[in-house]
Length: 125
Image 1: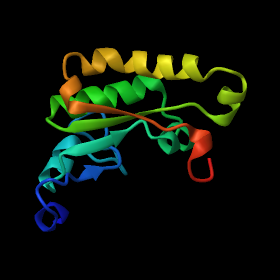
Image 2: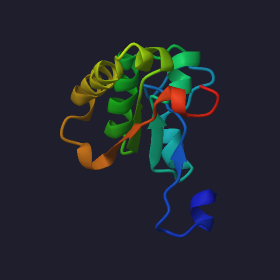
Image 3: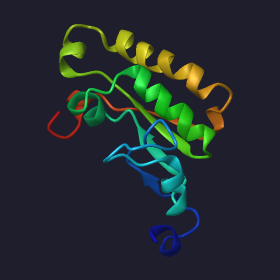
Image 4: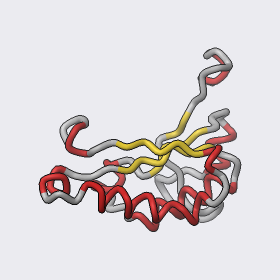
């Protein structure tokens, strides 16, 4: 619905998607469902998904791969916590998170935006 009321230059994104197409995954949404509502982007690896739901780099990479395989564009979030920043690990964490995404993205960088969001600098994080 939203895509039908905004200018064509504006894209709509979902906040998350799951890593497989079919199955009983209560509370999750597939890339196909996202596309069915007219959205063409998905945000993956958000700090809240990583901290609250315990999503690790490997799971985020699996979600990225599945989303790209199903024709979605991806906003892949990376960033360190306050503790990691204070320990001087910003570069290490961001490198690790990005490196985990490389095989999932492959040659599809035209369909990916990396969003650096340091957890300590947003919301109540």
